[in-house]
Each structure stands twice: as C-alpha cells, then as structure tokens.
Image (cartoon, rainbow, N blue to C red):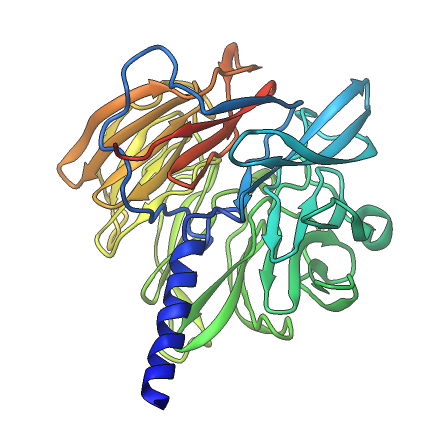
Length: 431
C-alpha cells in the first residue's frame, strides 16, 4: 500500500509540474533561462502580413515583457506622460480573453533616458505578483485582486542610484526571498527581502554603478550561487546570506551590462555591448572562478567576438549564438571565443539592433525589433530560416527606425507580446 501511495504522490507531483510548465511566470520563463519547453508547437508560422490574434488589449508605453501564470497575464506600462510626470501601472488580464481584471496605478517622476515606461517583467509566485518600476517602485500585490500587500520606494529607502536607462532587472524569488537589484548605497547593490512582508533579510555588493542584469541562481560544484553581474565585476553570493563566494573583475563601460549570464556545466558566459564577451570557469568546489578567454575589443564597432546589447545569447557546450552590437547574429566557438559565422538575415544593420533568441526543441524562435517572429535553426554550419511572420508592429522610433524592444512570453502554447499600444496573444499550437 505504501508503495502505491508513494507512486501516486510522485505521479501527482509530476502532473503538477507538467501543468505548470506551460506558464511563463517571470523573466526567462519557468526556469529563468529563456527556453520554451512546451510540446505540440507549430513547425511553421501561418502566412500573411500579421499573425492572427486570439485577442488584443490596449496598453500604454513600456519595455517590460509579460508574465503568464495560472490563467492570468501580468504587464506593466506608463500612461498620462506629461514632461517628467506620468503614471506607472500594473495590469492583470485574463489569459483566455485579454479582459483586464484589475489595474494598480501610482505616480512617477521620470528623469531617466528613454522615458517610455517600465522595463522589468513582473514575477508571479503563488498568490502574489511582484513588480519593479523604472524609477524604484517595488510592489507586492495579490494576484486575485491587485491589493497592495507591501511596497517600497527603493530610491528613498536605499538611496538607489538609478542607472541611465532606469531600473530594468526583474526580481528573483528564491524560497522565502525576493532578491532585487536595488542599486542602493553602502553595500546594497543587491537586497533580499522577505517576500511576504518586505522585511530586509540581507544586502550585498558595493558598486556606484548598477547595471541592468537580473539576478540568477546557478549551481557550481554542488553549491547554489546567486550570480550578479554588475558594471564592476561578476560576483557570486550565497543566496541564503548574501555572503560573497567569489568575484571576477570585469569593468563595463557606461555601466552597460544587460544580457543574462549563461551557464553550461562549470562555465559561465557574459557579454557586454562595449566590452565584449568573457568566459569563466568555476572551480570544482564552486568557491572560485577564473577567466578562460575574453574578447580583445573594447569597441562597439571593431568587435572580435560578441558584443550583445539587450539580447541574451544561447550557449551549448560547444557553441554560442547571439546578436552583436550592430545586429550581427553570430556563432562563436564556446571553447575559444573564435567567431565561426555571422548573418544579418533575422535582424538588420544598425546600432543596438536587437533580436531575442528562445530555444525550442530542435529550433529557435526569434523575435526581432521590427516585430517579426521567426522560426529558424542554428548550428555551427550556419543559420537557416524556416518561417517568418509579423507578430506586433514596431511603435518606438530609435536611430531613425521603428522598434519594439519588449521580450515576449511563450506560454499556453501561445506567444504573448506587446508594443506601446497593445498586448496580444497568438496561438502557436500545432493543429
């Protein structure tokens, strides 16, 4: 009987994990790694100028991506902008219809560059959703009603030094903690809050610059580590205490570090717009790290490796695929950093040109800044485009071109995407 009960519990837990797997509850999806793992997804996109929508709901300005969890979609935006004054909002939508279920609004004063709305994807954890605004408004809200459970002003409470383009890193839930890139003074670059009350648990790292990289947790040498890449260094912390484990200096020009670090085995990869790539090897005991190789160029123009701006590359044991400073989709040898090939087929030729890369089974979904959704394969032999359709229209002018810089969410066998006017759901289920 005990074996039968145990098997039943295991089966129930497995079924629960499968059911949850089709959500995208935070930056990077269920595992915070920007991989889409659902089965039964289309191999090619339907032809036409614009992918058919299940629904479209009006929203305001914003760079933040959507989070999808338990039948709801959460998105942040900016409305009523007059000079520096505006209103930031957190919205909850019904995932099946796009109907707005609730809205939470609060006034903001923007003194940041590109003042077109919040940047960070909301984080859903059970019956709570957490939102970080562009100028330091941190909110914990009830999923069902939008009721404020607790809130903080990171600028007033921590003296947070707003980076040039605003607070952008999506917070991280780990156990009873909400870990946030705050940018505070006196060793409070990263702060851990008790997620239910907002009480400070620990703070760590002293860096006058903040950067834009979301905190992530990896395991090296059997040791769970909070990796925070910031403009001065790549730092590893004990996620339960905030105590440092190791640090590797990497000074980034203009504080421009954005891409989420990638881990494969004992190696950790980062890439910056000006300063290029760096590959680290973490020791067998997880207590130190050293540089395996690093790009030789500190220029956005003369790039010898991969100088990503917003897009997070994908890394395997043998190769790295990512978008460089002027739109070059590149393949690097992961062991040496040597460039294998490059193409501009999914992107274009221009400063900051961007495309987000999301692996799915044996292919990739790419969402470029022109609003196209692309299905392609990438290998050391090259890039092959299988299908392309327009997902959303680019609505923001940058460098004399129209752009969309918001990362979509892949959930419920659909893609959820936004621009400065609407958020849409497009069905990608295989028929």
